Length: 151
Image (cartoon, rainbow, N blue to C red; front, top):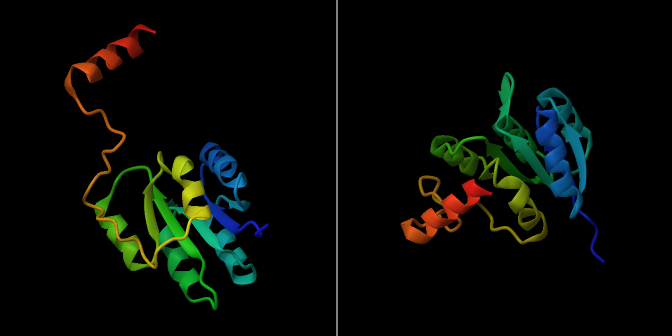
C-alpha cells in the first residue's frame, strides 16, 4: 500500500481550516497552519508532497509559499485557492507552478489532486468558468428551483 502524502495546509480561518482538514485527512496526512510565518518556518525543516494554501494570508499571500517551496531540492506540488474566481491571480499561480482553485470547490476536488497524477503545470484557462455543474436554464431548472424553495 503506497504511503499517504504529507500535506501542508495553510488557512487563516478556523472553520475553513477544519473543513479542509476533513477533506484532506481521508487521503493524506495533513499539517495545518493558520499563519504564513509558521508555515514558512515549517517548510524550511519539513518535507511535503503538497501545499494547499489560501491566497490571502494577511500581509503575505499563498503565492509567496509557492515561490519559497520551489527553491527546495524536492519542490512540493502547490494548490492555491481563493474565495472568488480571480483570473489574474490564477495566471500568477500558474506562472509560479501552482494549481489554482476556487475555495468552494476545493473540499470536493482535493482528493483528486492528492490521489491523481497531476500534469507538470495547470493548463486550464483561468478566464473560462467550468459550467458542468451549473444550472443549464429552461423549465426543468426553474422547477428544481421552486421545489428547493418549497421544501
